[in-house]
Image (tube, rainbow, N blue to C red; front, side):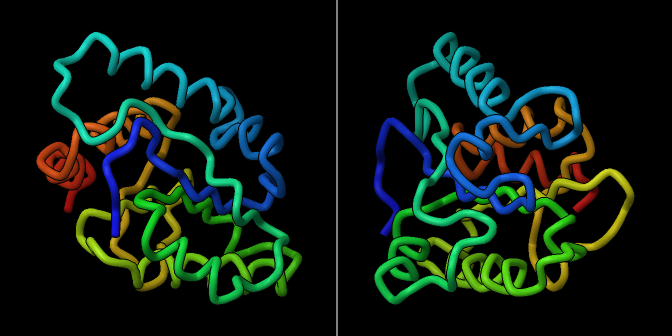
Length: 168
């Protein structure tokens, strides 16, 4: 079950994010590092009213692109304790089919967890491809990613606004 915590665990699925350091250094749109976006959102949240689900995001260290298929313990953790995921469209087009398949398996475990509609997948894409059969918020820029992560920390009402901004 999703719990209230200071950090919102963030599953990062991207071919360039094969460990914690690479995930934090990952530049979804080639400009800002993911860790810098996370830190900017956290600083912004400090100035907001206290009523929010989390104070900041942290990269979930239990699974990265290139990891083995999730074992039952990791599946439970993804389902029960990870509320947010970033999915880079390049996972679908990776030259590493086994790594991509394991990443999509981890994403399926994540999606199957409790709190279904409260879970968030931000789809990183600049060229209009589709997230296959997934309910996602699309990010086409660092600013859009920042906005989606910010609304994620605030809770589901702000996520609804994000979905409207995304055209959904």
